[in-house]
Length: 195
Image 1 (cartoon, rainbow, N blue to C red):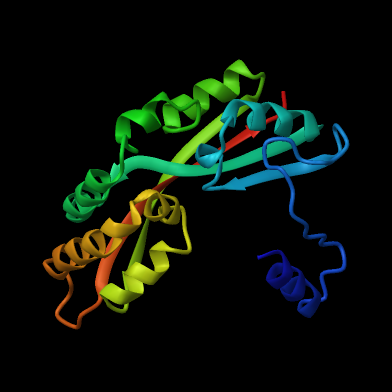
Image 2: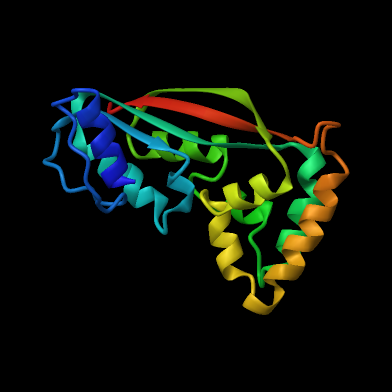
């Protein structure tokens, strides 16, 4: 990702873009040096979301703004049986209850965490995004490129073919006539000022 993003920035002539790997919970930038900090569907994946939110606030200039996206918690109900299969193969979770316990797992929890950390002007809105996969195999390969991969890596190796087969069979039930697979996600967009 770093190499491809760097190549893309150079191809676009963006000389001001510097792409490098780092620790999301404790980025290596001077305090009060950034105008904006953006986090796209990642804060809830971090071991210590509060630490990350606090460190991002320290990186912002006094007039700086934070932008964070998380899932809204509302799911495309067609996918509930597929998600249930996945959870069945995961020892100990994850579950919606786990997300609700996270300081950044739900929109309400994220808002509360930001305010407790001293952020101000917290604003949130939710948008629904439609996706369409070419077919079931397209969905399966896509899941290995997003956060879902963490779940697949926790499924015992001897069960992975079974969970894949069960999931693909269920997906067939709501595939469109042309074979494409519809899915929507609701994303909560949160912005806040350093305060």
